[in-house]
Amino acid sequence: MRGPKGVNQMLKIDPDAACQTVLTTFEVTPGTCQDVLDLLTEAYRDVISKQPGFISAALHVNDAQTRIANYSQWQRREDFQAMLRSDEMRARNRRVNELCKGFEPVMYDVAEVL
Image 1 (cartoon, rainbow, N blue to C red):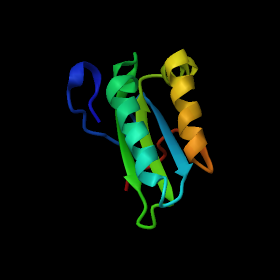
Image 2 (cartoon, rainbow, N blue to C red; image 1 turned 135 degrees about the vertical axis):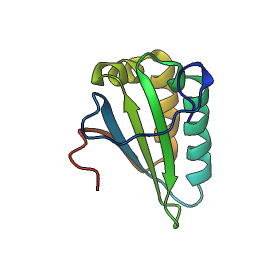
Image 3 (cartoon, helix red, strand yellow; image 1 turned 45 degrees about the vertical axis):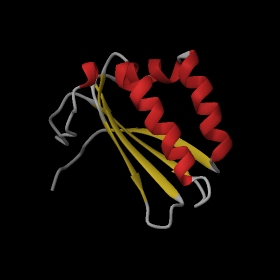
Image 4 (cartoon, rainbow, N blue to C red; image 1 turned 90 degrees about the vertical axis):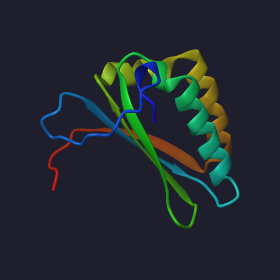
């Protein structure tokens, strides 16, 4: 995903990094997987990547197209939370929720890189 100012940011997983890691899983069907992926890609391109504190993100799809995993990094957990609370993202997340069986963002700290 492109970070601030449209620069391609490479995800760097580092247990010593002072950033917030967020893993979000989306439960989808093969019939809705691409639609949800398109909505997420548009949200990152048009809104999320321009938010204060956004560092980088990656979207992953399992081979059965029943799960989408989103790995994102933020400078601070408050930056991620502010993005989620914005009117724009609340509307977009309602649309994503209509196409998913469910989704859940969870904040993590990197414990080890092997």
